[in-house]
Length: 83
Length: 413
Image (cartoon, rainbow over all chains, first blue to last red; front, top):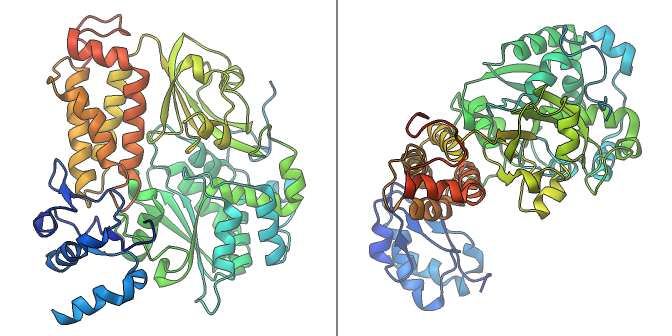
């Protein structure tokens, strides 16, 4: 699944608000200091909705897609357009 | 074992910087090497960058060379050397400034750059003076390219994105990548950030060719390297060795031991600890060290005396690296501070019962979670210390006793 949709964190932008964990509890856990842990960033298909919400909800715009182009059929792009 | 003299050939290191005329008499002028040939030569040598990360120099140059329709590149010669116990870059700059400048000019000519930033640690006053004096002696055409930048004091100020950040906006904190520096660095132009020793090697390769370069060295990594040896040896300081020279031979070159070592920190404060039994016959080259789970890093070898406390030493390094964080990324800002706090408690016999467990866990937790590799390096030093000094960490935490120290309990801090 290494070529599936992947999330990345801009560590300088991230302030550890934890909004992403609230949005994607099955995908993201927080470390001892409140910063998100994304083991390899790969998002399983069934959690795309949560991941999308986490990306959109981050107040620091620190969470983003690493490989937008490879997202299945531009699904995420469509979701974003609908917002 | 005889000292190797390539980078350090020429006038003695306890004297003045090599002058332009001495440099010319010894090595001749700057050769005119076509760009494609220069890059092919660098690739043929297998030269790895000497700033710490060990990225192949030829590949780095080619990445910039082959960018089509890109803007005019910029060269940054990185001589910040924020590593406190390493001295090889400052010694090279202070004594062979023209060799480094030659390498930087060759980079500019090869890559078509119109600007060379000589990025120096402002605390290395001898190096700064030697380079400024040397620039003033260069031909007028070169002087127009060369700009001396005095970097602020700080461990991460030498990190390549921090270097570019400082040159651009006087802020020596690392930046998020991408964009890669090779694509958009100084003034948004493609930028080659290259360690000063690497550039000095280039100056010799341009003159004598890759086959000459590969005559030295023992293992897969060819050539010579500058290293800094510190600890219980007769002559602490900078030496030039064949890559693949063993630690034992380096100690001999440094005049032998003055007391019995128990362990070695190899690669720098972001490097790796090894017990002396493992380290002694270890070939000092990136490939061999990597195979043994160690790192060549910036070429620092710090021996730790059998009577010195490894728990205390590694804890002090942790404290230094935590203080050296740019405080931009959460896991680095808070994680390194917690690692420093917990290791200091253990070292001073005041460990909480969770400290050893947390030290191990936090090392894993900060790794790979920052804009730069500062937390990774700090965790690497700590986690190898936890392994090499495992008994002593346990003794400090559980029995409130130091195994190494002859000093009484509580007297070490």
